Amino acid sequence: MNLLLFLGPFSVGLGLLGLGAFAWSLRDGQYDDPKGDAGRILDDHLSQGPAD
Image 1 (cartoon, rainbow, N blue to C red):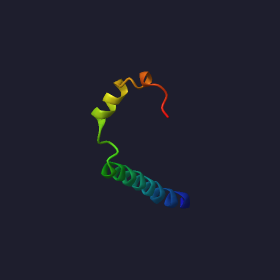
Image 2: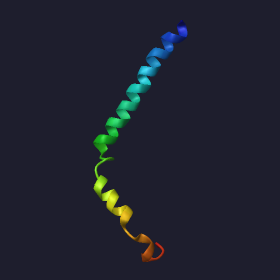
Image 3: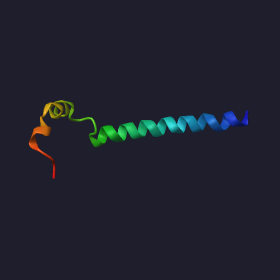
Image 4: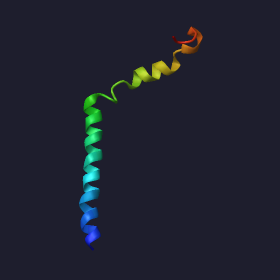
């Protein structure tokens, strides 16, 4: 029973930590450019030679 008293708040804390990390990544702009990423996939970067 004592273990449940520890694991309950611990799991809620981990969930809040994950939610905070997700909110931080949204605020930081990690998901802002989906169309640009799709365009860069189609770019023919291999025909330009090796990158220096």
